[in-house]
Length: 216
Image (cartoon, rainbow, N blue to C red; front, side, top):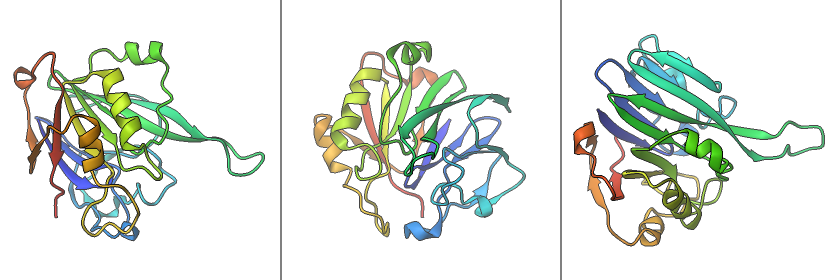
């Protein structure tokens, strides 16, 4: 399995049978929208144009834009809606963001996309089983702060953590640098262009922080 980072909360995950792209962002972010072929596209908030710019994705991808369970091309996906806030006006429906549990090649990834509030109950969290890789936003403002993200990491105890949704070159929206999160986690990290991982490479009883360089 390979994991690449476009920026914002958008990733490309390449498995043996499928290429997955998550949350392709709009050019209004200041970044070049993700492009490329994919078999699966996951949208965590389909009404938000910052996270639903699918026009640059080629092929005939299956669009996962609602909660639920899916089995596609050797990938099992569970979309889990998390409430983020109440409606802006009286009578409005609460806002939800769909997080994704992704299972492929015997590796389990929990992608918390661009949430601000981690509202998952302990029983539901335990029901997800062991999480190998946790992807979570750390930049504050409209997403989790570095401090809150670190608390979630310690609660879930994954083997690998990949931070997302922080300040990157060209991004017009105001987010903190990833450094704040790294400091909260003790200062140790690895930086790489892409993560290439197999189940046997996962180190038990350790949390590895990996910062991926955004694709350009």
